[in-house]
Amino acid sequence: MKKLIIGLLIAVGALSSCAVKYERPDIPAEELIRDFSESDTTFDVSKIEWRDFYKDTLLCRLIDSALAGNYDLEIAYKRIEQQSAYFKKSKWEIAPDLSASAGVSYGKQNLSAQTAPYFTIGISASWEIDIWGKLSKAKRAQFQKLLSQENTKNAIQTELIANIAKSYFQLLALDAQKKFVIETIANRENYLQTVKDLKESAVVNEVAVLQAESQLLTAQTYLPEINQAITQAENYICYLIGKTPAPIQRREITDLSEIRFPQAKTGLPIALLRNRPDILAAENMLQSSLHSYNSAVAAMYPSLTLSGNISTDAAQMDQWFNLPTSLVWGVIGGLTQPIFNGRALRTQKDVALKEYEIAIIEFKECVLGAGMEVSNTLSSLHNNNQKAELLYKQFIALEKAYEYSYELLVNGYATYLDVLSAQEGVFNAQLSYIQALNELIDNHIDLYRALGGGWSNPSLEKNRIEEK
Image (tube, one colour):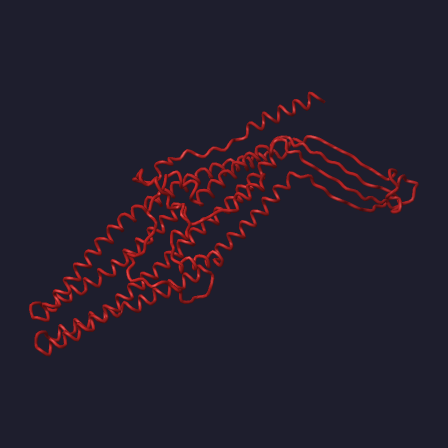
């Protein structure tokens, strides 16, 4: 018996060492961000809390409302609770099965005896000793799935915060465009009156009046479009918050260029692996699939099961507790080696291996996608910043050209076509400038989200403690 136990322990150690240990797949972490600058390592914008990143009180209220009422986020929390239930179930798989039974049967002790009732009541237990770690590995797989679901929730949260913020600042941009269009309409009404007066003085003809009127109508057509865009943006924010369509309270701002965000620095590229919740979720699923594979391998080894029962058996119910006469008990232990279901277990192992290999590919793809997203956003931030500066200079130049051409027209030194051209240029340049500023704001928000900013994870440590 002693040799058998020693041999069994040696076998356990040898087979346990065959389990695949987790190692993060090789990825070019330092090369994830294109044209990465060492100066970006001095600061990581993703470490800033979202309240400190946005700082707008009304926007923060909207985000708080969304975190409390968004349906996608609520579903994500339900998914976490669902996966938590699976994890708790896997923890109990290691515990013994305990059951109670009571029954009555009719039979004969021999052919000549009369049929008589036979009463029994008892408790039985069965416990599979997890010598190969099959059950513990399955538990770890479920735990990693739980962590993955929590990180998926965090990814949904970062996306939600970004969408709320982008829609909010879009409203500010639309308000700025609407204000400019209203001012333009007023200016063009004045210009139309000026052209009519000039016609009375025979300086210009009816064509000039009609052109001025056309310019006025063009500006007026922008108002319904902007109002529709405002309504849609407000309704979308209400949808994200989880309430019916309604106006959205927001601050008044005279110039979008006044909006400031913390300096856009990325930190080390490898920080993406610990900051981005989607990457964390992908790695959780990778580890889960590895534990599932090791569990499937362990399932092919013999299983050691201990079972026992204790009961009281009697021919009369009042004899049940005539102890120890009516007491019956037994203990059984044994190894069971799968034979005929071996193909099913090998298939299970092969499928688990392919799932692990797929999870490796998905993790690498997720990391590569994160690097691409950050690189694209940094490029957009740089290029849109240059674009906004150029559009502002263009607007200033065209505004001066309009003022000069208007004065020249009044004094008879320019034609109405010069004024119309400058007028249209100012209008388009200002709208384009506001749009460029809005795109620049979106770039800051996208970079913050792409680097993994906008989430906190207080429950993960709690679950790690529960696993232990």
